[in-house]
Length: 131
Image (cartoon, helix red, strand yellow):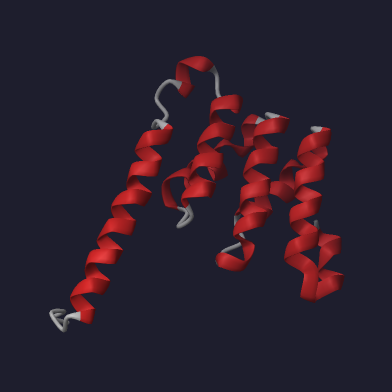
């Protein structure tokens, strides 16, 4: 994934494609690079984080559990939180995987955030927002 930096304008697209291919190949040597990809922040890198989470689940290396747990609980994109949760389900032993939040729990957080955002914007539009 580091080689993608040479193509700066397309770096995120190339890196996303590479991350997907590495997961499909179940290439364990790619785990450190995929873990680093999970740490890229911002909306421009969301597709890369999604592909990296999915690929880490396909590879199944328990060494990725910490970064996947972090993404599942803290990523701003619900798609990535769900992919991280699904990857953990693949990676963790069954007795640990049962403690993961359900997909509905994760989607529920996103739904609550969306509803709250819409309500806030409606207040702002009506001039009801107080600092």
